[in-house]
Length: 487
Ligand code: NAD
Image 1 (cartoon, protein in one colour):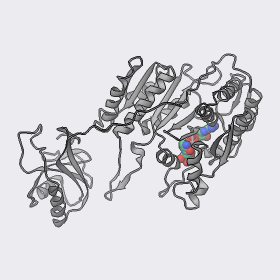
Image 2 (spheres, helix red, strand yellow):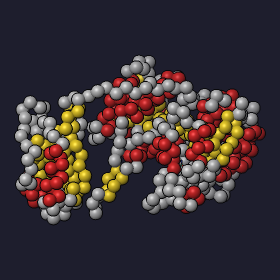
Image 3 (tube, rainbow, N blue to C red):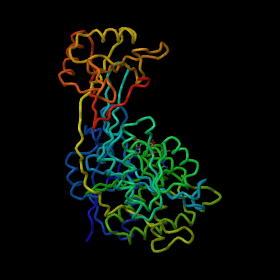
Image 4 (cartoon, rainbow, N blue to C red):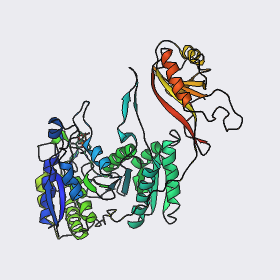
């Protein structure tokens, strides 16, 4: 039975590399039928701000498998990234990006790269929740959830186990973002315990990225957050040969989308010179995912053989090692001609698809949640931190009192330093009027929500402009908020 697949040719080099990929799939007799939808720039320009016509969601959801060429998200405001929208709307929580060097046939300084980057695909700064709060200040919310992090950690370890990989490295920045990245790291440790045979390591993302670029051969499976994963997978794809080589799978519980990791490359669009390997590798992962590992291997072997023969597109062409420089269509012809042949030197890689990986259902454990204060953010340009501090300290509040003020996270009141630059965006922390010696920090004791409402009312009446509030909670008596730098 042929599996129905939705395809989209996308923008820029998209149509060229999709055409090459489809020709190879057909020549290899992949048991699939194609249903085409149009997405991307043209659809954006027709006024669909998410880059897809509303009626096309139905086909996508019916088929459950999507092979997508890169698209161009028009610059400027008002357009949402279609890639991000599809990944999040269809629950594609794991982005799987295998990168492997094909030394000596594809030029790379690192002959030993064989890595799979597993990127959390739905959360983090890519939630796309941004606000301009004052004239000078914009914010982007970074959302990390326990269920989202558990899912990606289970996926990464299960992927490593089923693909016979030896090590999983987690990367994040929890020395700075102790709550968000701290949660991600903690869940890596929690889930990792269930895999005693797999080696586990954690790297802070900055040194982790440096090591990836310097000695990538030491890494095996890397699991990380959305933004970090986006960045490091481009780095690893590039140093292993070309961004034009790597494919990616976006995996959800019921739906999966396959693509190249690169973008629409407008600089070379229409010239017929793009490397179709990234999308082809996405299609190979798709075939494995839908249970056609035989066709996947047939194509992959033909592709490896073609690279071994030195038939190379411009991005990987080097006089010393290449035999013939070809365009997109000619490269596809060479792969088709090699169907049925195997590489002579390169190992035919087994492409694990992540298919059949079951994620245990999320179980929420009840925790005691207590409101112990509130951060009031205000837009203010009328004076110094001292001026604002004295103004807020004198507000006629019955429930709360000012504890401190920070500007861009640094404490500026009380006892600020004159050197600290202050923007128009102030975070003013209010806590219970009376300290208590029964809580860990005497200032953080339960307050009634009426205190928050009163604060907003009184601040507004005093001529201040609250931008927003963030409640401060203890969970099982532990703070669910960061302290101000210097608090
Ligand atoms: P890009 O990946 O399109 O191009 C970066 C560089 O790599 C360019 O020099 C390009 O010529 C080269 N390159 C990329 N793919 C190649 C291939 N297959 N063969 C040979 N060379 C290749 O990144 P960009 O220029 O930053 O982005 C262009 C557009 O793509 C933007 O609109 C961006 O939003 C979009 N984009 C889309 C996706 C997607 O649809 N999944 C992903 C990333 C970027």
